[in-house]
Image 1 (cartoon, helix red, strand yellow):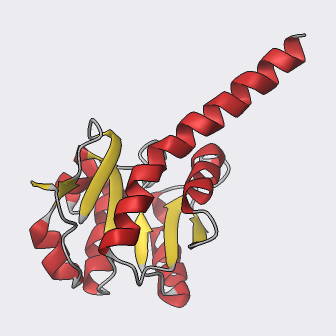
Image 2 (image 1 turned 120 degrees about the vertical axis):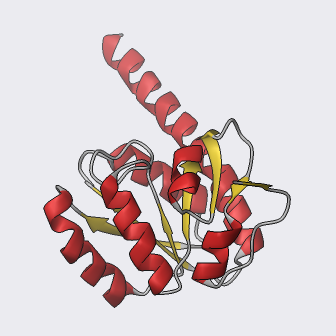
Length: 165
């Protein structure tokens, strides 16, 4: 009985997490239809649930590339990985302890990706304030927030219907 309860809670948690990314992925598909490869920089073992939820929300329409980092010392390696993979966008995982929204590593990634003309998206207001082009999800209260300056730097369209920060 206890195992069934744990399994049920795990499945429910994964489904809720997938919902965290569905709005973001839907908005990305509309605003940037060319985005077929999306990268995530995170501690993959600690953020396994979020990465799985993101992949579920992406469906078969987008390839998710995970660049694994264990600490801030891995940011150079992460940039090399991003440069070699050439993603169409990067998504910040809010809860990641290394490169999540609000972290100095996220700021570093956002700045470097803008220089490479790769937009960054987030699920929190903090991520958009840091320089992500857009954010929508639980951390924005479900509202689409956009950063027109970041969009211009990244060379992408600002998603329609968003509130500018």
